[in-house]
Length: 80
Image 1 (cartoon, rainbow, N blue to C red):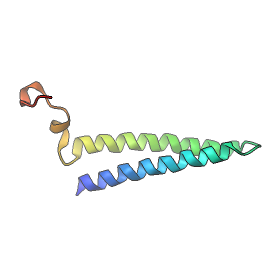
Image 2: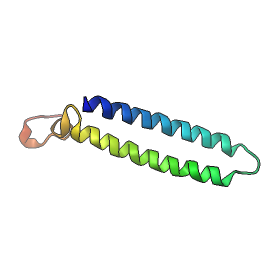
Image 3: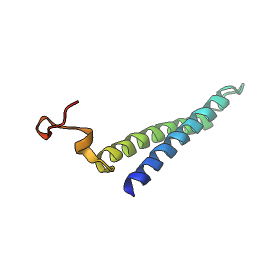
Image 4: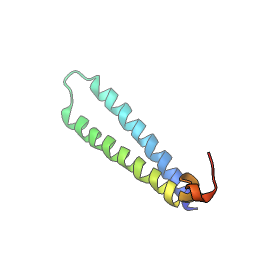
């Protein structure tokens, strides 16, 4: 169940980031550049990117298959 929650959060955060970048593109088309809204959206891009990384690492560590599947060691017998 945790794996499903983390996967949904990961994808929703990515979609939110796409929406924010699209909104930034629309604001950049305006003639007097709205600096304050652009700076707020830029903060959103930074927070969204950080969340994607944190949730992605959480999926690797606490996901369904876990860290041993993602990072096999030579002693585990798994080969690429």
